[in-house]
Amino acid sequence: MKVVIEPSWQQRLHDEFEKSYFQNLVEFVRVEYSTQRCYPPGKLIFNAFDKCPFDQTKVVILGQDPYHGEGQANGLAFSVNDGITKPPSLLNIFKEIKDDLGSPIPKSGNLERWAVQGVLLLNATLTVRASQAGSHQNKGWETFTDAAIQHLSDEKENLVFLLWGAYAQKKGAIIDASKHLVLKAKHPSPMAAQHGGWFGNKHFSQTNAYLKSKGLPEIEW
Image (cartoon, rainbow, N blue to C red; front, top):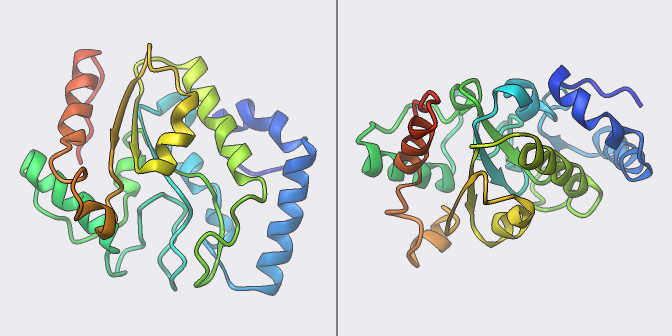
């Protein structure tokens, strides 16, 4: 099955595209997009991979599924298009960056600027039906994104994995923590953050300190 995706990812994930689960997934997504309003736009489903090639990946942030509001999802976890109101989780991420690094909260919630620096913003599920959170879960996307994480863990070293919330931490159990830095915190959503465990995690300064210690460029958060 021909899937259009960035070449270094195509090389590693082509076996997944031939598996029956993925072919069933493609058919499910095709029907959903032709009969329902779904996000992100079809051309952006693999945007996380396209904007952050395997060879350039330095940091991985795991999300759950895309935003399901009008115009929000752009294929990058936690990111929204320019001109879209920042969702509460993203605002809490920016507040933590401000507290951690002293950086002003940016006007744009589009995190493409992180992706092109080597931050893979990967949702476990890459599509969603409008206004129905989790509607495309358990259809095969999780198996596909697990395969991507496994390739990163096995073939690279000195990556930073940021696992926010119980879902991401469970998904990240396959990561080899002996050769990568794995940082965990509560999810940045308001409900989780207000109970402690998000603010003050200092993941962004810790990430840069680790990258610097390995002789790698720091991320401009």
